[in-house]
Image (tube, rainbow, N blue to C red; front, side):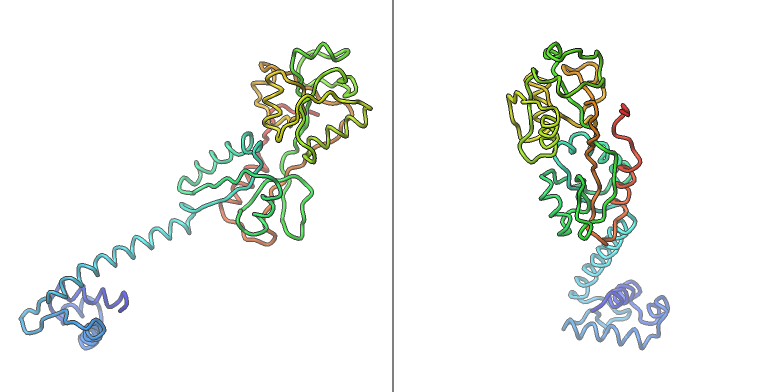
Length: 308
């Protein structure tokens, strides 16, 4: 049984005439008769009672025609739904990102995707860098955002806006920094921060590596009052007045630059920049959704306050 036979049986049921049905179907009457006989043989039942003039459907035939209509309608719906995937109206995109980038970077991206592709399902996998890279390499994630370096034998990558580390100091500790300038995003020497407490992220995290490097270069023995897992918690603790912490400038909402509980400082002579990149599995064909996300991330400035 095939879709063509379904259409032939439905047309014959409508007309109750082989001659009229064959004319409407633009096939010969013997050909139509042969198709119907083959169909009945395959099903093992008679669909049409030919002893009547005009012929009529048998009980089995009535049931068959009802189901045939349903099958054809389902086929139409299936084709329409698949067309929505082919045109980009429907689909799925999976994104790997760290938790703190999931807060400052991804919401605006998701909003733009929803505006452009309202029928697309968006899955965010906010986990650690190792798991993110593994997910992209195994094809479980369509794209991800990680920091350089990456293995270019496994991944294709595209740089996005550099992250600028700044020191967030609770205002109550400003007096402990000699000659501290007033206002946000002024420069200070890291060595002048010897008398303030610090909140740091755990060992082997990039911000911790930078912190330890700054301490070593400045010959500073830091007063670490708290160690936390991630940047999000470190920033929250700094906002609560626990201690100063290093945080990417892009992570901080612009309206907190001048109204928050912290003052943000650039660190003099620090050339370090975290370079985030979009990674995809090497050689993988990129969907329209992934291309759109890449366009957003590479063209849009996340940091609204420029620091030279």
